[in-house]
Image (cartoon, rainbow, N blue to C red; front, side):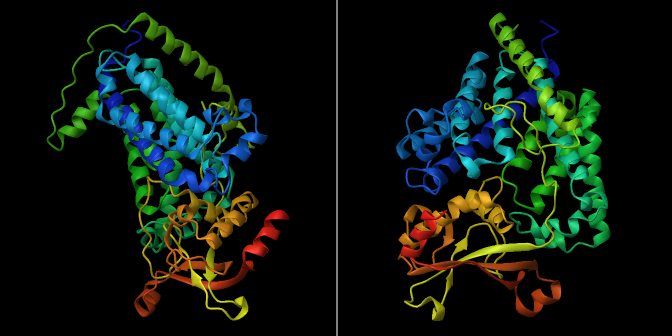
Amino acid sequence: MEWFDAEGYTIARAVVQRGVAAVYVLAFVAVLRQFRPLLGERGLLPVPAFTARVPFRAAPSLFHRWFSDRLVAVVGWVGVLVALTLVAGLPQQGPPWLPLLAFGVLWALYLSVVNVGQVFYGFGWESLLLEAGFLVAFLGSDEVAPPVTVLVLLWWLVLRLELGAGLIKWRGDPAWRDLTALYYHHETQPMPGPLSRLFHLLPRPLHRVEVLANHVTQLVVPFGLLVPGPVASTAAAVMVVTQLWLVLSGNFAWLNWLTIVLACAAIDDASWRWALGLVGVDVRVAPAAGDPPVRFVVVVLAVTVLCVWLSRHPLRNLLSRNQAMNAAFNVWHLVNAYGAFGSITRRRTEVVVEGTRDAEPTTATWHEYEFRGKPGDVRRLPRQYAPYHLRLDWGMWFLAIGSSAQLRWFVPFLGRLLEADRATLRLLAHDPFGGEPPRWVRAHLYRYRFATPAEHREIGQRWVREDDGLMVDAVDRARLARMHAGR
């Protein structure tokens, strides 16, 4: 079975399997903490209403058969516990079908979540996690060498991920082609991090160098993955360094970290030993115990053929002038198209939600609700939340740039604030009313920009904002009910 085994990638398998499992831990923790107020029985977009109008064949999920908030909690806890065993490497110590079964459970459970998650789960990294979890399931256990065909499929995934992101930028916004995209991006990205303002204030010539380096990393370097050994290992290392730069400059959920983990699949054992040897770590790889079972080989080859066949869709997408960004071509989220920031917003608009307990809204004193991640308080330093995903905060960014799809949940969100719904309030950083219901709420628009160094020294603010009018005027429960009925 020498043709089937990739003996020189044992460390890569361990890193990728455990890394992908770690991301699943975060994903299921988010299910436990956020799913109920967003999508539960009384959520902003309740799953029962979705499954009533969307058939199972269009969005396969165990929640089509039955749904309850308690079942969601069971799914979340099972996902966390199974993923933790994989992070610890326990299933990997058994026969090759054991990690396959464990990752299969994670994939099936998370597919059930994503397929009913609607706009709150409409992100490219959801499909990326599902595809990654499906593929690493077939890498086997410590008893056998990693199957070479599965490794090639992982390299193909990383190539699609990086090349798709590079092409969508080049074909999309001219700011990427004239190297000016980072004049705006650090300031207008969905969720700035604690260092984003410092990145934004870098000299503009350096921003142009950043964009050029990004193009090289995404449009040229990925082809190095096609040359296994030192070339592919070097290409993967360049991608890892680039992704770490992105980690420092913003909050993109687990997209960057999962890309780093997947890129490690292309680093061979010799390169790992050399790199770790530089820091005094001596790594010894135990040889596989024996040949893989024939049934395992047959299953892996069948999956390989399936993924090669499904690859025709993303390949055509990469070659198309009308390239789709973050597209899943099947309901199982296997072999998808990826990309990010095909267009760059030039200014930042924030929706600031306010409430008051005064009787008359026109003369009221308004108090702001503070979200965990998105900008609000102009003095507050943005926090680093990635790789954790704050779904409500991301939805508020899309709402601010004019996404009509977000309005379906925003009106119910205002209603939950008027009710002082505890589950909803736990998604926020600060409730100005201490758990008591306000009389009125409204949505105010502001233009935000990073404060210059001089402004920061003078007024102590990290942001400067200007009033941009009202998005939703003052509403109480009665008015909101009429709005909701008229949607």
